[in-house]
Image 1 (cartoon, rainbow, N blue to C red):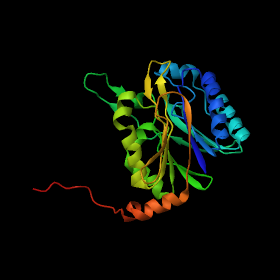
Image 2 (tube, one colour):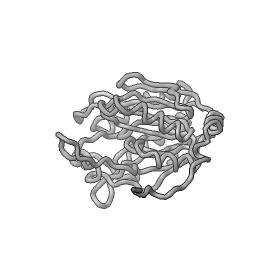
Image 3 (spheres, helix red, strand yellow):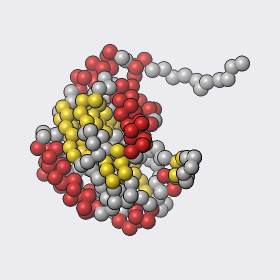
Image 4 (tube, rainbow, N blue to C red):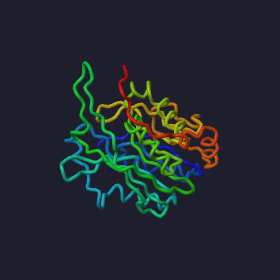
Length: 275
């Protein structure tokens, strides 16, 4: 099958972001894609809670998601909205990924599990958990002949999630993201290749790129990695675009047979301090 990573430069207007997505999905379909992944925060890229609260719509009967469902049906393809913010009852938001089937129906959802809370020298503390509530459930779903594993951006720094997805049958793992430029330059390629290598899975990473309306700059460089860790397709820039590659489940079987790390893994006790 053919898969597509869609790179965007999302802003604060959901309808404008949807309008920007429409021709990119059509281009992916025109290149023969059976499945397309969009970036993190595809439909609104906010900088703070005030911006979120001004435009984030409830999940039920969400107007832009309903439109994406119609586009998936029109193109007869799987379409995964990498993520969008969904209001929750406690006043925070879920960073939610949504998969549509070729019939336009919602097939699966995933709420980003890992949240970036950090005190960085010389900078203000960053507390993603003040705005978002982390998910608690890993998710897989069938996509054609593949089994798709879900993750979002910062999740990629936590190998245990990817190991869990692969052990649950995932052989294609989605990583929609909005990486900053400095972390993208330092870690983007190596982390995504590592997640592919250690799970023997295809990894597809759809990125935000460029200068955004909220003042942020993101790295771009959407890419697709094969189960041996080779980058088989990449957008080598930060502009909107479509990246398509053909994948084969047999490559997963081959990679896992050559290095059976999943099968050889063992449980062990935590380290003890020895004198």
